[in-house]
Amino acid sequence: MGNSVVGMFHTGVKDMCRFYGLVVNHVVEFSYKPPNDFTIRLFTVADEEITYPAVNCQHTYGIR
Image (cartoon, rainbow, N blue to C red; front, side, top):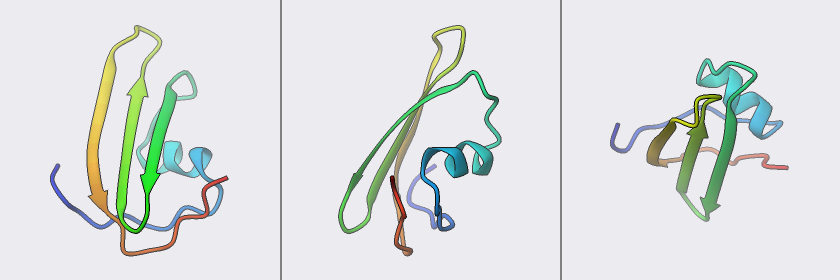
């Protein structure tokens, strides 16, 4: 995926799940290192791990 700009998330994980089109049964882990390193790791119900690389965030994330 490389560096890309993603949109603003106001409500944390739920917005991210909708943004990436994930189903309810995904488990999401994410880390944020200011100012712009943002990593998302997804686990499906089949324990398949999907990792998104860090993205360059040009917006402020409302992570709760």
